[in-house]
Structure formats: C-alpha cells, structure tokens
Image (tube, rainbow, N blue to C red; front, side):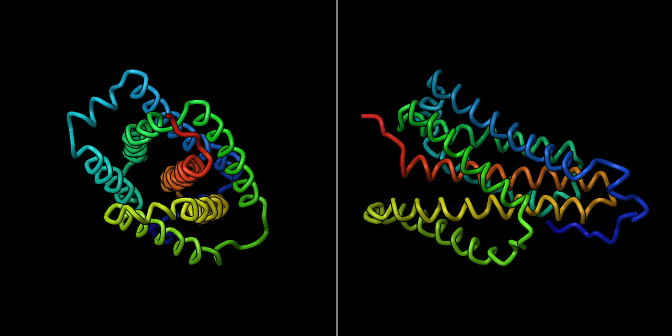
Length: 238
C-alpha cells in the first residue's frame, strides 16, 4: 500500500485503540467473511445451475470476470488510501462475490466430497503458516523476492498454457510451485499485519483500511492455495 505515515497525527497511539490481537482477529474475520461470500455464491450458482446458464449465455463471461476482479484488486491496492472504509469493504465484498462465480465452475469439475476435503486441508495448511508468520521472530521480508518470482512464473505459465495446450502435462509440477508459493505468502502476509498495525496506528481510519487490504491479501492466499491443492489432489467427476 502507498499510505504516507507522516501525514497522520502521532498523538494517537495504538494503546488508545484496539490491541494487536484484536486488530489481527478483525483482519482474519474480514478474510473469512470474504471466503464465506465466495463459497456461498459458488454453491448457490452450482445447485441452481445459474453458473452454467451464465457461461452459456455470456461467452465472454470468463474474461469479464477476470477483468473486473483485477480492476478491483488494483483499485484497492493503489487507491485505498483515498477511499472510505465503507467503500473498501464494499469493493472487497463485490470481489468475493464475483470470484464465487469463477469458483463455482470447479464444482462441476471436481466431486463435492473432494471439494470439501481440500477446503479443510487448505484451512489446516493455511492456519499453520499463518500461525508461523504471526509468531516467528524471523523477518520474512527476505523471502518476498522469491515469492514474487514464483507468482510471476505462475501467471506467465497460466497465460502461455492457454495458447499452448500441450503445456498442461506440467500441471502437477506447476501446482507444487503454486502450493509452495502461496504457503510462503500466507506466512509473509500474516507477518505484515503486525507491520501495518504499528505503521498506521496513528490513524484509526487508515488502520481500518489497512485491515481490509491485509484481509484481501490473505483471502487471495487462501483461495489460490485451495485451487492449487484441488488441482493437485482433487478427484474429478467422471
């Protein structure tokens, strides 16, 4: 985020507001609310076949959803300091709902029992790395270049594989890289919550928006970890 910490009134201190534990809990609650919206929309679209109807009637829906979600993420990351807390929350909820439509497609591909099992497995892995990121005394900023390189590789490979179908034979290897990358990001982004708390404690308003931004990062970590685990371990429908 591009907040300017020097524009705030430093007479406010973190001790006058919520504690680090409360702030962290609130951030994870925002993340879980986003996940609840996403999986709720995905399940509703699947059981009503609304997802199938939308993709049938709107051929470009996949690209529309991709463009819309990317626009929301870029807006939240680069302009969140100029938005109200309410607008930040609204964008996060809209993003979560739109991604639910995309996630719903996977319910047509993978068995529901596998879907549920992988979700629980993701929660365990995510929880373990989040706990490590929060409790470790080690500065995890050093792994950021490695994680970013892994993310760029995944994006580039995903785009190229859409043009060259033969690359799908490397899918399992790519999934392992994706799993490792987002496990690392989970620990890193969790540690960043503490930095945001200390950095923006002078302004409750900015601190609240930093919480939404951190929740978005953790949401993306969970969703991507889930999808790569699903592709790697999930049982497909016949």
